[in-house]
Amino acid sequence: MNKQIYQQYAKIKNQIKALEAEAKELEPQIVEDMGEVKSIATTIGLFFITCRKSWTYSQALNELATGLKIKQIMEQSNGTAKAKESQSLTFKAIKAK
Image (cartoon, rainbow, N blue to C red):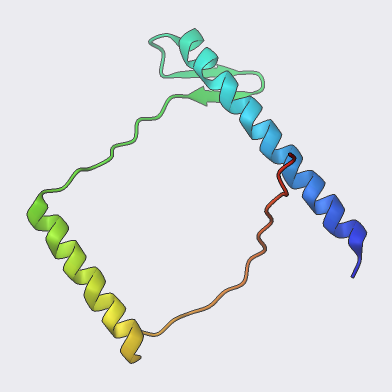
């Protein structure tokens, strides 16, 4: 086991996490600075505000969705549904006390 590559990977992932948190903190300031403008082109790139919808469905549709999920689980357990597996690397940092 090459311990160095694991340490390097963990260090990079922790740096990415810290930088993403820092960028997230800047977002409200940028949105406020943009005011009513939906996009701003700068010499470093394009900043734009997007709008995403989220839906709340009726009880009847939620019940149908639950029924579908139950049928999917049944097909998984009886072998009718077929699974496709893929591998990916996951890393979770040990939290400092």
